[in-house]
Image (cartoon, rainbow, N blue to C red; front, side, top):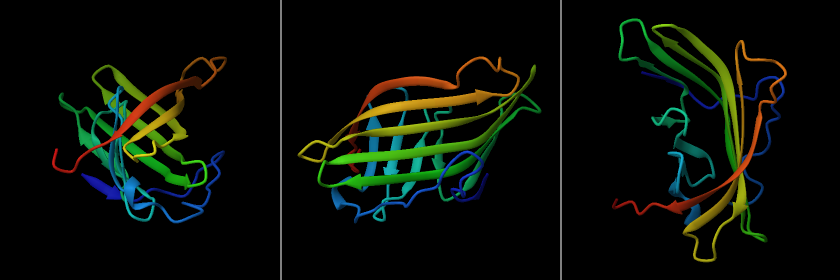
Length: 168
């Protein structure tokens, strides 16, 4: 079941302009990462139209404010509440920056509930041919009840996104 769209930023998340210059046509479409299940689809306005988030591996339409699905066991479910999901492209440097905010997730398991938030930031150059985006991925997360001394910033790694041919 789908419920509403990418939301205004919550506490501690600053919302920025969607894109400062026109979003180029060659970026419109679906981009798939070389690992971690990430897929991001951009529309003609430079909006993140949909994604497959690495933690949940389910397609999420960012026009919806939340995604709900029943779990495999009776009484289990998963609920994901989206925050801002934005892209910005700078043609002078060919840099694409993307922000994906999961304001809250709640996963009801047979043994209890997991609740938290996720923040994913991608920055990097797009190849001259417009088919490969080499992104520095910064992931942050917080889990309710986790040790408060643990830094929620899990660091940075590299992902290579490739433009997916729509015929695939």
